[in-house]
Image (cartoon, rainbow, N blue to C red; front, side, top):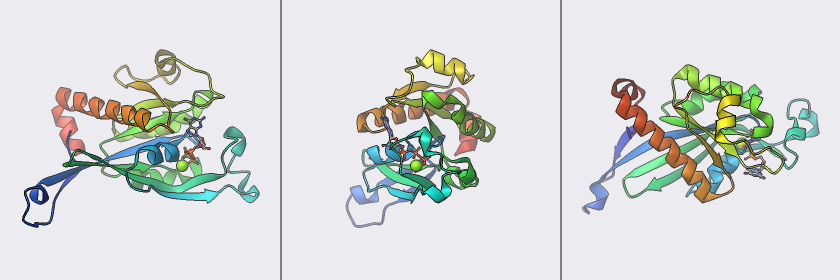
Length: 209
Ligand SMILES: Nc1nc2c(ncn2[C@@H]2O[C@H](COP(=O)(O)OP(=O)(O)OP(=O)(O)O)[C@@H](O)[C@H]2O)c(=O)[nH]1
Ligand SMILES: [Mg+2]
């Protein structure tokens, strides 16, 4: 995997401290209330940074909580989490705000990212069109992860791929954003997808770094 940048650890005299650390940025995107903040929080090894604001009745015309009845807050800027992979690779997770009125944040949140996980609620597939179009237009690789909501129809990956008119090479996986192991699987799928893209199109992958 190509790293987004490389940091040298400060010298303290031990072999471990002089090892280079590579870091990669991954974006967690998707429509309103699909579980992005939950996803980042489930896997982050640090207390995730969230920028949640209460969904008040004053903003009810904007924050349509009827779509996600357990929801009392919404992300207004971004989520941030961190996972170490061994001693040498650190993955930073940036979650986007889901509501269209905060879409102006997506460029900032996605800057320098290697790829994205786009979370999807199969009961509201149309909400995924904007994030999918966004990452396609930026040429940023992504995988689709259908989140496991009780109210949502269980679509097979093939049905979801068809309904979202995805390119054949885009992976589709099922995820439970509350479960660390499930979130890790989705992230591994993205990393594997990035490696395949890099192996098959080295020039374009290098340009993303
Ligand atoms: N049943 C179920 N509920 C989930 C799952 N993931 C998230 N939730 C719940 O769904 C609601 C929305 O989750 P969030 O993580 O806030 O969603 P979000 O995409 O960050 O929302 P915005 O930032 O407002 O777009 C919360 O009440 C979560 O507890 C899941 O996999 N299954
Ligand atoms: Mg959120």
